Length: 310
Image (cartoon, rainbow, N blue to C red; front, side, top):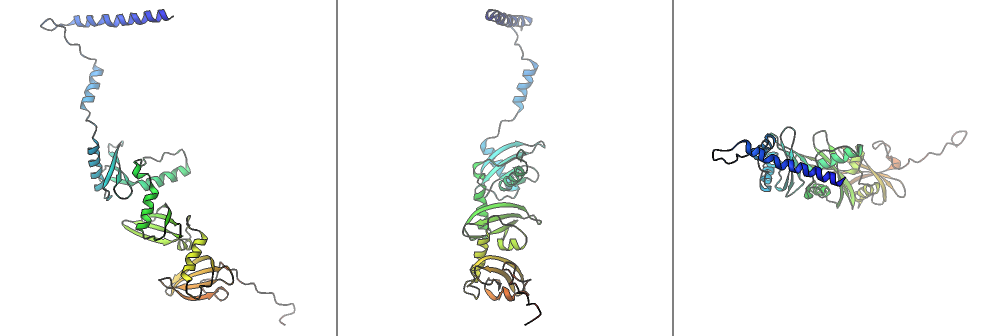
């Protein structure tokens, strides 16, 4: 069998070699030298396409183009690293950029350019995969400087004026006014909801978030209780060892908190805008204050003796 295969290969090789002189004899130039044999039309067309194709951009050219698009997109990003991701079906170029300060972006070079924050892209991917692990979340940031999203989120909390030691932050989504919402948790106290709208930050304590029917994943009941207990220091309510607390609401006179105490009756306290206690109401007599206490059970009334009053 091996001999037959070798013979066949030899025959093919001989055939290929013997054909070449035949082509050379078909046409000779005026000096009786063999004319140059042209390549096949397919190979020629392929070579022409390669010759027409522009050379790949250099790293410096990519960086300059990415910086131009980042500037046009009003990202405020001083590009420290860039990557050319390719082109869309609409023939627009897409870049990923890392910034000298703050999170990076994926930018599509449209008119005007569109920039997507690496943080929001990662959040969208996480949300999508939670619903469908096999879903394709689309382009994601892969430059090493862009992948530590927690670092950037903690920096956001500082920008928003959160004074605690921030240990956890997550993206919540977009608000109705277009602002982006975040939750920040603290290792040494109660956390906050944060909102970034344009260049302005606002923060909402989690005890208020709960009063407005929101949720805080990073803040415990004990942390909210400790917050209210700190407000009570030096006041008539200081003796209450707060185990649970809630924000009841506010009016022109101040803001009202209910506190459940470890021992004894709970209280409702009215505070001013500087969180200084102005007045304290024991739960036993505070039924008319915002519907009364909810955290401290109301005292039960003993049933009247049979036969009427003694």
